[in-house]
Image: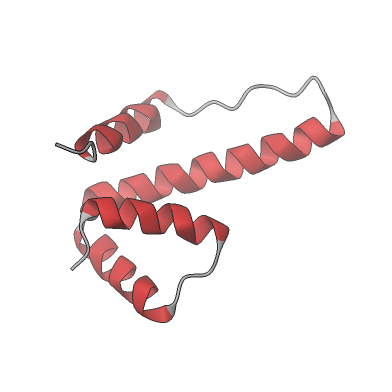
Length: 87
Ligand SMILES: [Zn+2]
């Protein structure tokens, strides 16, 4: 069983490359049960999408706006990151 910390690492990894089948399976099993990790995944995807959009905008236009997350997502991301701090 994966911990929330494992899941957050796998989620970041999955944005850069395809995960092996067993890792995806463990990930989805955990996500099915853990609301916090589902929220984290959503925020991560949002951030990833915005970062990519901004990179494209910068290529096209040097006066591109800054990447911003909604307040709610920022707070949630902060909570998840704090809960993953090593004790
Ligand atoms: Zn979790």
